[in-house]
Image (tube, rainbow, N blue to C red):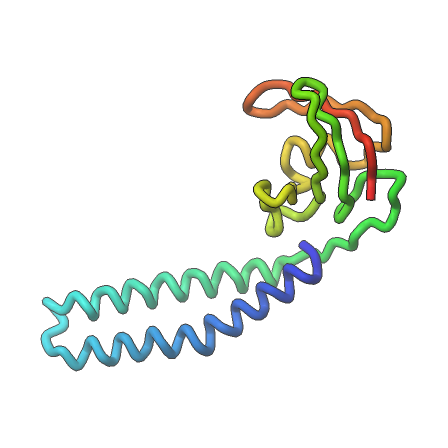
Length: 149
């Protein structure tokens, strides 16, 4: 993942461990004040929320601990991490520009594709002018690389 994404995860973890954890603890405290815990739906909901929170905190901690920072490629001759690649879809006769990012940052709606995705893998280490074939769930797609930034 990028250094930027790692920092976002650290900020989210800090927020969850400080602000959100206190909010959930307060919900549990309020729910306890309603009396019998065996028939207290507010208490059950608050405890469920606490479980979800702790699961999310554990997931983020794991991501941070196992993060591998990928440096953005400055080379515009070859597609690498952080490259913006303009491709021509040979079947649909359309051009699109994609940014190659780590899986944690991928967002196809914003044309940010993972280097692990079929198209991302197909583009990596390729050059301007190369034609690639990508095996995707929809079938084999063909693209020509027009520009690398």
